[in-house]
Amino acid sequence: MLKPTIFVDLDLPKAVLNYLAEHCSVDAWTEEDTVPREELHTRLAPAEGYLTGGRRIDESLLEAAPNLKVVSSVSVGYNHFDIDAMKRHDVTGTHTPEVLDETVADLVFALMLGSARRVAELDQYVRDGRWKRGDDGVLFGLDVHHATVGIIGMGRIGEAVARRAAHGFGMKVNYHNRSRKPEAEAKYGASYMELDELLAASDFVVMLTPLTNETKSLIGRREFRLMKSSAIFINASRGATVDEPALIEALQDGTIHAAGLDVFQQEPLPADHPLLTLPNVLLLPHIGSATEKTRDAMAMLAARNLVAVLQGEEPPHRVPEFKV
Ligand SMILES: NC(=O)c1ccc[n+]([C@@H]2O[C@H](COP(=O)([O-])OP(=O)(O)OC[C@H]3O[C@@H](n4cnc5c(N)ncnc54)[C@H](O)[C@@H]3O)[C@@H](O)[C@H]2O)c1
Ligand SMILES: O=C(O)[C@H](O)CO
Image (cartoon, rainbow, N blue to C red):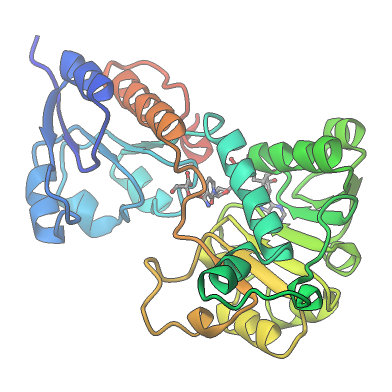
């Protein structure tokens, strides 16, 4: 039987490429730079499947890909999918939840600990030769253990953060979510709060919702003003869930103490971005799930999702909006 053609524009582990090649005729983009739009459209023309990362899937891409049946994203977030356009073109979307939860939760803790204890800033302090006896007071940070964390978006990753917070660090866990989660309340002693109440009560505010119309700029100037002046804001969701100019203002004028960010409105962060000038923000290049083991697992899951759809089976993780 003729194998369906698929286009892949990510560097994939050999085992994943082998698995795909067993079931599909694979056209892979092997250049280091992102595939240019025109070239992408050409390569997608014969493709029934597209395996990618955060590439925007919009009307013009779909028009260029008349044979496409499935876009399989190597990510849990799928805000780069234009769901309505995909439905119009009868293209389904899949994603890679669960396999990355613990790795992303580790990174949230790296941001919390790194911001609270000023890890990057003080590493630079030592390297610059500024460390001298008697400077202890200048080196103080804030405690993470037994502090209060407020998790906005108590989903799969939110729960992995709550578990670390409650059971590893003796923290009080507050959460805000679309719906209450009684099981999480029991497991982590977590308290459900409305957003404003959570912002006012938390030492660490951790953003972990997907980016949707409702969560776009959910945290802005008003929300920062509700936080404690000692609060540390962590964003590991998507940059656009936060009003970035308002965050910069809050960090500059002391409305909040510090921030730890893995995601930004524009990625990569431009070299002249104002966040780069602030000492009280820890900046990471969107590495929430970036360990070899986890990225390999995500890639294999994305491949299984794609092959399942092309074989007419229900994939392990179809994006909820496409479920019938
Ligand atoms: N930094 C990274 O590298 C990285 C890695 C993985 C995921 N993410 C981001 O984290 C997000 C969450 O992933 P997940 O697997 O935990 O998703 P999930 O769907 O399991 O959890 C999201 C939670 O947010 C809640 N939510 C949605 N809209 C809300 C709203 N308006 N107000 C309050 N709560 C709301 C949902 O009810 C759900 O419980 C992803 O969508 C992605 O954007 C980032
Ligand atoms: O959503 C995800 O899985 C990560 O942010 C990687 O894009």
